[in-house]
Length: 388
Image 1 (tube, rainbow, N blue to C red):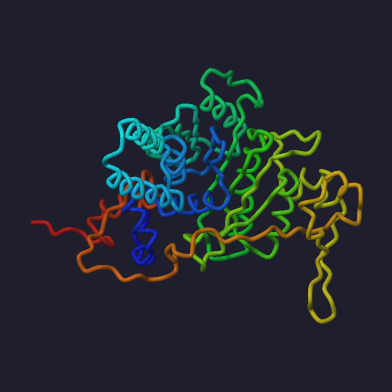
Image 2 (image 1 turned 90 degrees about the horizontal axis):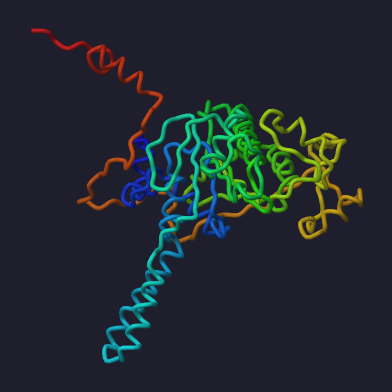
């Protein structure tokens, strides 16, 4: 978590320190789960580009500890208050009724789960989390797959290939490059990072699995989403309320993993925008992909698929060439309740407010070397200390 002037004005930055999150990005995953129910029936999760570990922290507290946040947490608190008030009024209840009330309260308490496996992967070191296996590895290297499978199932053979018995239910990625300010370059680098995460997800996801990753919205983002539509039945784009409106970031939520027949995922031969994915027969992107048509008045025409394309059967849409579109626009949803904080707004702070330190300081910040050199030089801006 940084300490820039923008961070100090951000309500989510302050709220993350008060509630014990490692970074404000934890609220992005919580709001995505509140909208799409990502954690339902999920026992094996892989968090890519995990450092500093805020998303892994959400997974640990929700899946392992059983805690509830957002609207679900608010409803649970309201139920506890209602139960407490009704319990005081019914103080003359019989012993059997009191026992049933105690059992009901026990069921509402969060229960820890032992069948959940969470693996966090990043090139940077990350402080440990309860129930999370941290791997310092490269998501683009083929040797990462055996390490991942070994972490998910310690009893498995590292040389074995992914099978439905040791596959993953959910793969998430909040990774982003260091932005340069050149939007076209940043969008391209981010798309390559997304495809690196997708290649690993294709190797370990089980049929019906989910994939969530950060994207930068640009003029050609519809092509990227159409590529994802080849291997996932449902692809949607979401903008959490905790994500700044001034940022071009968004999150693509892919559900129901269903690779085409004959498709084999491998990190040694990764897929990309212009490689293997274009060679796969798909109802979204055909083999011959014409460019955009520019009209005389300067407008651009793009051939789009039908609106009810998601509801059509894949076989029927593939057999009918007229239903095969060139580009496909994914539904765009805003996540987060309107009563939540606005990440771009400035809120009044009380006078007695005390500033808190970050929950988890950076373990290996990129500016660490610069701080060491400044310290050796004698202080800030290279000033030397006075000698007696």
